[in-house]
Length: 94
Image (cartoon, rainbow, N blue to C red; front, side):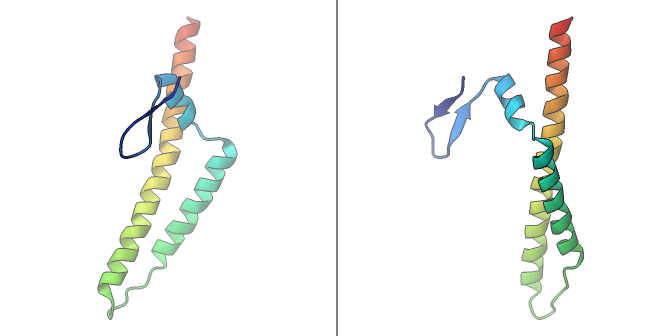
């Protein structure tokens, strides 16, 4: 059972099963995240360098890269959690 841990940030003590279950995205959630990933990737590809504001370009590119990274992370974490949960279920059936 999840328990709220007292600290500066909200965090929960979760069982392994709770972490896996909470990491698995629905098909629709995966589709929405994939659409967001595509939009951000297109924005990054079309980003134009502004010689009058190189710092602004670098910041925007870094922001877009960060968004791409977190969106990929969420999709990969979901896939990994699904595999681990399937392995646990298959192992317990033996």
